[in-house]
Every structure is written in C-alpha cells, then in structure tokens.
Amino acid sequence: MKILLLGSTGSIGASACACIRRHPGRFSLAGLAANRNADTLIRQIEAFSPRWVYVASPDAADKVRPALPSSTTLFEGPAGLTGIVEEADYDVLLNALVGAVGFAPTVTALKRNKRVALANKESLVIGGDVITRLLDQGHGELIPVDSEHSAILQCITGETRESVERIVLTASGGPFRELPSDQFAAITPAQALDHPTWSMGNKITIDAGTLMNKGFEVIEAHHLFRLPYDRLRVVVHPQSIVHSMVVFRDGAVMAQCGVPDMELPIQYALSYPERLPLDSRRLDLAAVGALTFFEPDVEKFRCLKLCIEAGRAGGTHPAVLNAANEIAVASFLEGSVRFDQIPAIVERALESHEAGRADSVEAVLEADRRTRADVLATLQEKQRA
Image 1 (cartoon, helix red, strand yellow):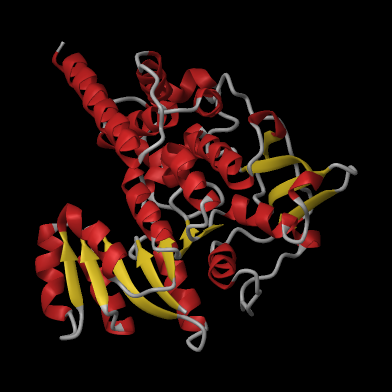
Image 2: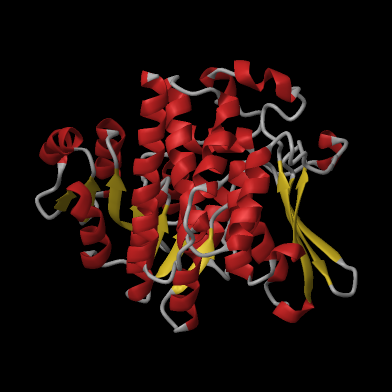
C-alpha cells in the first residue's frame, strides 16, 4: 500500500513514518509533503526515497533540491500541494497538515477515489458538507486518525448506525483546567504549549488549552458519524486513557482505552479494518489507578461552546470559526494578543458574519479568506489605536 504523507515533518508525520518502517511489506512511502522543515524532510527523503516531494517554503525547497534522488519529482509553492495530490501514485493520503490548508487536498484525494487517513480536522470542520456529499456519491473513503474519532470507529465497527444512541468524546482538559479564569490573561505561550499528556504541534496544543480542539472534534464527529449535535457529548478525562466512548441504544457503553500514543490510531487508519502488530507500551490499569471524568466548563472555556454553536448554525459558520481561530492563535504565539482574547476574537468574527452555504470548495475557501482578512485588519487597527 503506497502512502502519500502530507505534513511529514510534524509529530503525526514522524509517527506515521515509524508505522511505515514497522511494516515494510505492507506500506511504502510514495510521497512526502512539508512546509519549511528542510532538515527533517531531507532525513526522511534519505530514509524512504519517495517518488514525489512537496515543499511549501521556497528557501526550504532550495535546500531540499540537492538531496532529491534523480527519479523524484519536486512540487513547490501554493499550487504544488494540489499538484502532488493530483499527480502522485498512491493508495492512501495521510493528511497531517494543520489548518484550513488541508481541506483542498482532502477533497482532491477523495475525488480520485483514494482512502484519506484524516488527521487534518479542519477539513471536516470547514468543509464537512462538501466532504460528506463526496462520500455519499461514492468518492473515496475517509478514515479518522484523531485518537478520539479512531476510538469511536473502533467501538462501532461491526455495529449498525441505528444502534448508536450517543457518542462521548473525552478531553484531557488541557493545562488550565484547574486555573481560575481570572488568571487566563496572564498565560504565556510557553505555559500554553506545556500540555500535560500529549505531544503535539504548537497550533493544536494551544487549541487544546482553549478547548477549541475539542470543539473541532465535536464538529468532526457530527460529519463522520452522521449524528446530530444533541447526541454528541464531551467529558473531561485528565488521564487521557479512555479515548472516547459510544453509548448504544440498549444502554451498553463501549470505550477504547490505551496509553496516550498516536501510533495506534495512525496505523489503524492505514490498515483498517485489519489490526497489525504494534510493539508499544501497554496499558496497565492497576498502575494508572483512578480514572476520573467531569463536565467541561463551557463558560470558562468558551471556545468549546462557540464550536458547538457554529456547528449547529452550519453553512459557512464553521469556516469563519476556524479562520478567526487560526489568526487569533498565531497572534497569541507572536505575543500580540492575550490567551483570554482568543475566544473573544472568534466570537466577534462569528457575530459579524453573514451566513452562506458551504456547498462548494470555492464557497468555503472564500469565507475562510474573507474572515482572515477581516480579523487581521481589526487586530492591526487595535494595535495602532
């Protein structure tokens, strides 16, 4: 099975490469795509000799070019990302890109009737209507990589959709679950990037701290498993052992458990429905001791509430939500906005948005573009004032 790996130099990409190395008879790496981390990408090229490579940054592309095998085709620039997804020969697209940039590649691969192993949650957040329509028309296959949605898939495989009463998504609660909200204004980027249980990229880690990431996962679950929002629930589970649960109509509750490690859901998405051996740390419940669960505070963590409201509103609201959040998070990491201002920036963008239909790639990307421009202009005007 040939894999095209987008976002190869990030944490998901590194774990995916480990899965591919573990089963060389089953998987091969057909192509790699990265943004600007040339050094890591060069090491991956040397290890896997991919036939296709994409690099977003011109400077990184210049550094990578001499390391390419003569048979490798290099794609560059904004159009190159679509180009590699359209032209490369692969069986599975593993989309580990971060942000709205991952939406178009997901659509392109599905139109080519490929399996998409999806770690790019923004694809479904901003374009769930487009993607579900493609799937309903028989285009491709979508397998989730997020640990929560992988857990749900593992619980419902072999069950009928009608037997599912409710889905329960678990959240670690992030590093600030016990911090009073009146102290959020003083949170630094370094503090926000120190996640208690998961090792992730900067953007996703900040989203985990605001619970925006969990809200995104609610929207994802709505599209993946075709359940209304009133049958989707979030509970905080600090130990990150139970990755999610499914409640069935007879009252049975199935949960998928394991130590916090992304290699299992990545490998499961690549091999689904088969389970392949994975030599990893095993869960020892006696050593863990207690597992605790409690309701999230949606007033303290307003991003979770905003996500569910935007998901219920539908149309282009989730695209606006995501675009405003991407700008707000980037501004926080740069030090130009406070942590507690992130939900306010997102809420302002949603309130000023004129709803539209999200029935095409163009409509989704236009809502994304317009929101980014508006939010940036507002932030810049406030900085000048």
